[in-house]
Length: 406
Image (tube, helix red, strand yellow):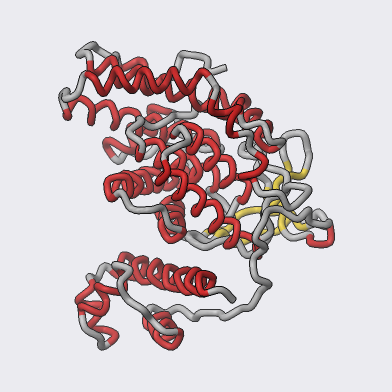
């Protein structure tokens, strides 16, 4: 085993125990000092551990897990394949999630060619939408500095609109008005499921963490993604699923943890879409994040292209049991905001166009996806530009997005 593979596996173990300890501290309502006293270590040890500066051995990880009432399970699996995607046979079976509203699923690739080799990068770099968004960003930057309070107000409005639409795409029943009432005043909607309210609050918390990650300007890590997912979904829960034989069962959705079972979906056309097999997820995620960090550092690809490819390939892997759509839209906006662009809101009213653009990318054509996201990025840029000029954006613009992105 290469040394970098050992480091990756160690970091995955390390990140998992850190997430569990942080969850334990939150649930118990105790701070690091109190936790250190409970387990008989110094406060400095706990601080270094949670800040990523520790180096716990396997025995230490075991002790820490037992201290927070967890029992770790050591399992061995085949090492992840280096390239996507082997076509699974029906014998693999596993669970098939019932996800009719978010089944823009990606069929697994029929050969071992990496997405890096499949994307026509030159073709994407020549799309006119890239020049359009670059020009409006240039106009905005030319007006700086302008009121920070005004810009923050617009960003807050955009985040609330994003929260509503991203959850609505996944089947959340809260209206835009109910979403605002919950976020601004903590008011729940009568007759609506508790989980719908928790999803809205979890999304807001995950976006807050993403904003912090943007400001930190550190490379993206798998630990960051798992933490975003854990905050997004909050706690483990049960979800209906169908076995390969057609039997309806309940499966446990684990938050902040990569999937342990297949999570292929049946779409609206009653077709099964295949995602990466669980054993392949760590390797595929490593490849994807390494690619993104490298491209961000080189800064040769347009940020919209980087964000679009990151979005699609994360969906293609589908690394978690649930919440992949919301998580990938958070990562897409993380990539854009790191490059100085505003966030993109994918309107629920245009989810069919959204799914179709993702399906085109499944077949290697990323142009529809870049154009779709680019048109919605133009909406956000226009709002920022309007604000920078001191013009009134009008509250009604936040209820729906009027410009058809097709």
